[in-house]
Image 1 (cartoon, rainbow, N blue to C red):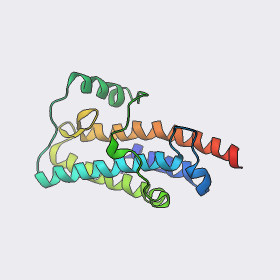
Image 2: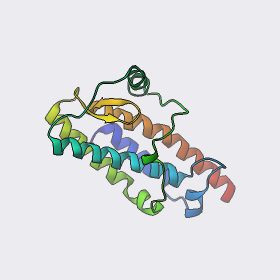
Image 3: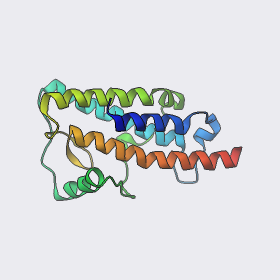
Length: 172
């Protein structure tokens, strides 16, 4: 497994380990709870898996041509490793009440499954071919998809740690 995704997996699992159901579901007004943040990440991993499965079924890379905006965002997120604030998650990856324990128990498996299918496509098409379009960033290579998930996961890991700290202070 990719080392950076393995570290992310361990950090995400550690960030929510031992949180009570009450702590896991607590959130500040208008913000996501730790359960919702983790579900959002889970949905991005399962969505990526589905997209890469489509690539394998078609037997060809499905990346299109990037717009200027997509190219700039890809440079910022994937190239510079910065997740800009204010980007709204596509509806398909917004939390919609999956069972929190399922998400907590399966998040690591989904990261592993995602990395495996990315690796499979990378071996078929190479690391630099735009294999699949991201809904915001546009076409990305296998290598870029991995980096995106690391940057995105680290962004939300910070949120999880803050939510954990605040919920613990509130509830003990």
